[in-house]
Amino acid sequence: MPALKAWETCDDGVILRVRVIPRASRCAVVGVHGGSLRVRLTAPPVEGKANTQCLRLLSEWLGCRPGQIEIRSGAASREKRILLRAVSLESLHHALDALPAPPADHSRSEKA
Image 1 (cartoon, one colour):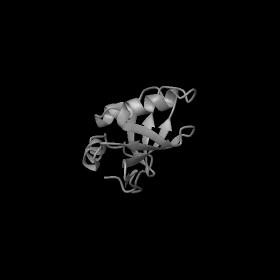
Image 2 (image 1 turned 90 degrees about the horizontal axis):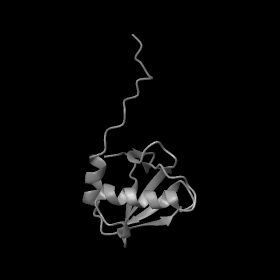
Image 3 (image 1 turned 45 degrees about the vertical axis):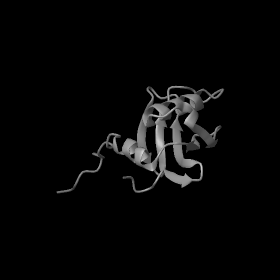
């Protein structure tokens, strides 16, 4: 599990902190970095296209209906707080655990 949690529980479900990277070469849920779930989107951040794609991608990733996810804050920002209704913490943890491990940092080599 990540050291910094990207989620918190609330009365309505779970709030997920998401950092969106628009205009990426492909759509993907990257992983948790700095207390936010990183999400790459091919859509540009204009006219709500990136927000729509973000919600669709997260619903597919979590295996829930798009109507069960909504942006609570940050609709015009890369940093968003997204409400997940009817998504348990167990299923969120399972989805996070299924993400590939981040690549190893080979830029630091040990000195002999």
